[in-house]
Each structure stands twice: as C-alpha cells, then as structure tokens.
Length: 344
Image (cartoon, rainbow, N blue to C red):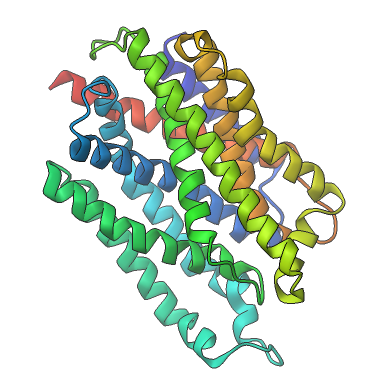
C-alpha cells in the first residue's frame, strides 16, 4: 500500500477505535492530552535540531534526510496548539497541587508555577520555537536556534513534566528530555526515509543509511546513560523527596512498563543495530525506528501518568490506540509536507 494511504488509513482507524472504544477516563484525560501534544512537538523540535546541526557541521551525508526533516518541522503548529490547549484546559488538574491547601511548597516554586506565569512561559516557548524553526537557513540561524533550544527545552521539561510530580526535582531532567526527543526524531527519520524511498528525493545509499543507523545506535545508548545516571544518583542519595518518583514507577505494573521502556529505547536499538549489516538494512532499520517511537511514547507516559492512575499501571488498548492515532496522524501530515516540498 502507498505510504500516504497506509498512514491515513491507520490514523482514521485509530481515531474511530478511540471514539467507539472510549477516550481515556476523566482523571487521565489531561495528562493524555499533554502526551498528544508533546509527542509530535518533540519530533518537530528534534528535526529542527537535526537541521541546525547539519548546517553547523556542513555535513554532506545527510543531504537526503534534510527534506524529510524540514517536512517534519512544518508540522509544528498543530502539535504546539494541541499542547497549549492541554495546558490551558487542564492546568488545575495537572498542577493544582502546587496551590492546594496545606501543600508544603516553597514560595519561589509557587511563584514560578503560578498559572498565569506558567502559561505565559509556555506561550513564549512555543512562539519562539515556531519562529526560529522556520528561519534555519544557515550557520547563524542554526546556532541561534540551538542556543535558545538548549535553554528553553530544559525549562519546558521542568514546567510540563517534572512539575506533575509533587515535590520532585532532578537537575538532569532537561538533558533526559532532550535525549528522548532526539532519539525519537532519528527513529522517525529512519522510518520516513524508507517509506519515501524512491519518491523522487535524493535516495540514501548504503553508506548514508549506515551513518543514520550509527546515530540511532549511539543515541539509544546516550539515552540509556542519562536514564541510568539520573536513577543511580537519586537511588544512591536516598532522599525521601526524590526517591518517591522512582518508587512509584518501579513497583507493581509500573515496574513492567519501566523495564519495557528501557528495552524499547535502548536494548532494541543496541542489539538490533550492533552488527554492521543491520544498519544498512531497509527492513530492519525502520522496524527498530518504530520500536523506539513506541518507546518514546511509553517514556512520556511513564513521566506523566502515574500520579493520575492510582496504585496500578493501566496501559491498555485505549492507550495503545491513542499512540497509534497520534503517530499515524503526524506521519500523514509530515508526508504531505514532504510531497509539497518535492513538487516545488
């Protein structure tokens, strides 16, 4: 089947299954909407990082990937608006603990997470990212984007995900957000490159595919390194305010999801792409990419949902369908933008 039709059919079937099968229950609605917005947003931002690094380094091997990366950045605003809607509509449910009666929160943290200030920062982040993404044309604009992105993506991660967990903080969280974001983007490029192979863009030869496979392999290990460092430091210090985050996620059904998360984001790309020949395989590379994309969704799910899901983890059919719908809808939009670029 034509890639565009396959993605369109998948997104329609996923949406229909959600409508008739039911959306996430009320207490999980707004954190789920947060995922619906941030998952595609992370791919567009990661594509911008890829393009910016491409300009700064003068890389030539990735010429065939740049049109697809540009197409991904052009899907930015639907994702940004979806995320902003989730933050505006669900702010009280997501972050209301900060201002709850009897909450032990530092005055500075209360001021930083005040609804008006927090939503204003979100609007600024999204507006700045959107403005810079469309202006990456050379080394100067690429450098400016990377500097601004490095600071703001960390702050956004603190605001949108770390603040979901009362009293928890990690100085490594911004780096962890970036590692997952860029790993998922490389995976999307691997999937998209093979899907659009022969559609008229500069085809990637085996050497170029091998470079992409090496990047995917390397950043899978980088993500695992950051995951381990964050976990190990918090486990070693054993501070009650910090360990509650991992105790909740490493017990019961959440422990199974956490192990699966590490498996999809690190173990699958590490084992599958360790041999040289698999990095150039047009069958294996996109399958690894799909596994990592599913792992990225699961990683965000584990960040956002535990406080709203009670004692037991509940990643079931509805959650899987929601991922399928969002991923396929993003793929459809990105492929449409890619075709428009190709027709110019």
